Image 1 (spheres, rainbow, N blue to C red):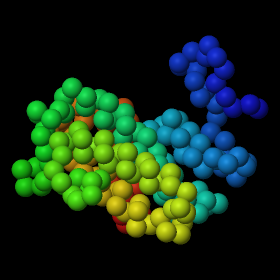
Image 2 (image 1 turned 90 degrees about the vertical axis):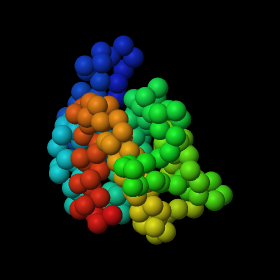
Image 3 (image 1 turned 90 degrees about the horizontal axis):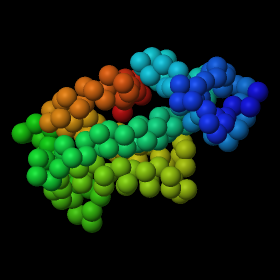
Length: 187
């Protein structure tokens, strides 16, 4: 069976195929596609999505999850446009006690919350797609750094843009999935 969306496919029918067992796949992006299918199939199945299949290296599973988190965080940042601006959020904060400096510069510095998120998405995306970072090899310290920064996106959004956060989370379950993922993999 060919698993692709043909031109003219209705939105309700996109990716409308059964979840295929990962052990039956041999294409280069099989793990990534399997993860994305699990999310599309039921984004609220947090435990099922985060649980690594038996035949997948745990480091590869973590790597693909972080790659997916970055993709989906782009959608959250788009939702925040016009709401989270340099005027409304001139600094990246969670609460008044927590100010996050942007490490995407030569020296860590203050950025508006939106700039912080964009800078860190760009930095993390470059890092995760860097051919010099191998999975599982040298990637673990980079993955932990990315996870820490992703957490900051959620805390800022939750404390400063709660309505947008809740609306987004009700559909995507991204923060819940991320939190469960970070907990089970001790990140």
